[in-house]
Length: 116
Length: 110
Image 1 (cartoon, chains in turn cyan, orange):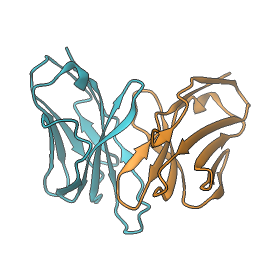
Image 2 (cartoon, rainbow over the protein chains, first blue to last red):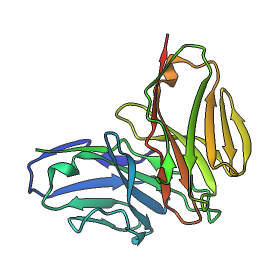
Image 3 (cartoon, each protein chain N blue to C red):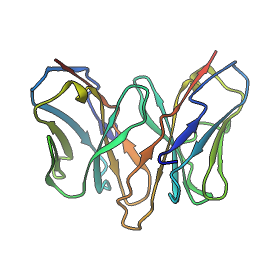
Image 4 (tube, rainbow over the protein chains, first blue to last red):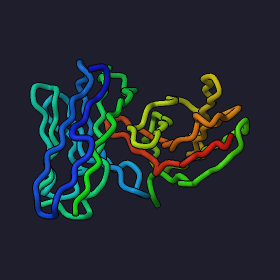
């Protein structure tokens, strides 16, 4: 597609359940980012992929959070044993790495996760 | 001290007004300075991108960077109701992580 695609757009789950969030980046974009946006908290960095490897996963809040990327394309963010504080909008972004350091992020519309 | 400070607003202005949005930062490693615009229920979209201190203009939008004061601004001239959105400042150092401000919610009243 023309832009970054995220699915599902909305996810309601019960506390303790596992969830998987999917991101399809723009074709050809080698870098992929996950951010979390909570009310009043701004965008919180979670993890960054370059190709299939994750050189920076410093933002993952706990070991309940994991992410993978396959084929240098689709990425999945998994949250195990969800807690109410995990409720937020999870945003994915991709960029084309040019080597100049001035890569620009293109965001999807996000997945609104609600943990009851 | 937070790495990025941005007033969350909300900021309400009449149509046609000049809007000034600002952020301060503390990380001297930031080299790239950006403004993103986010409409409700959408992801942020890049609005302005600058590298050096000084001004950059694009239509009704002007981005200003003052590295010595660690202060960036976005000016919107002749504001329109369609400019109503949340504006996020963003910063990037030599590696790939982009750090965002909390966002300022702007409402332009017709």
